[in-house]
Length: 296
Image (cartoon, rainbow, N blue to C red; front, side, top):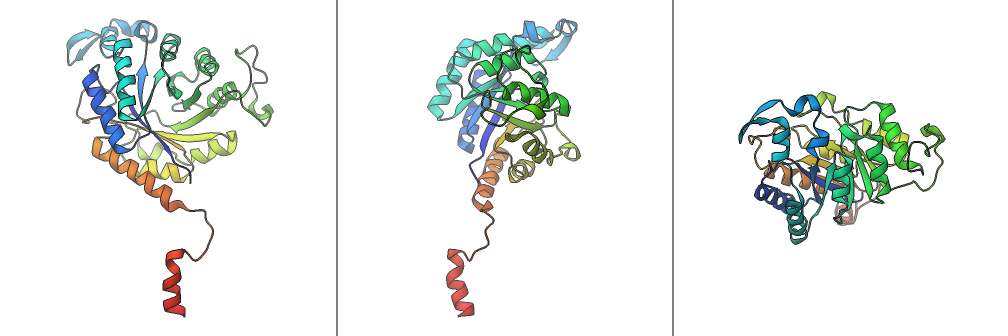
């Protein structure tokens, strides 16, 4: 079994505080994760008009939803420091762009992949733009129908820069061979936290069998063993939200993994990789002296 790529999703669990972001980077690095990931938005574009003026209670007092989203958004000075600090800590980083402005912003950094969140995989303009960057594109499939997932993968798999140039749309007609860009698909349930009986980890095999591509798992549940089970079922990428404390303010904190849990999760995945083997039935090297002693 090859090494699983483990992404610690910081998202906006930093609450707009660079010091918290650095502490979360430390947690991910010390736990043995391969990368941390943030979320990047242009709130003026991403926040729906009917929600912009809605008043919310926040740790910084009452403010409109638009002002809150701007309050927790990192800009270039913060990302410059994140880029520097991740290099210092020896861990990769990236972010999920929620709009074209954010994708363009991220391209000024040498990030290893672009992650399209579940909410955006039906945004074909963003999908095509991500494909054109030449970076590896990772998509999550939460709250998506099979047809929506299939169309998104077709965009990534076939040559063509726009919907007009991308033909055919039927995935069954996609020819074997080199794909248009390097990509991976993460099975996901977009509930925070996700109930165990709705995780449907068996869908990992469904995605692998249907699309013949790299498949991973993005989990939002309380449990840790589900991520290890996902690797056993064929996931080569694991993404989990992380937090310093689940009681911190924020919509994603409760479904995130705390520092000690992240250490256990990574350890569990690495132990599975070591124990998995190749399935061939042989007498192992350590069994030889035992066999000789007991059987002669």
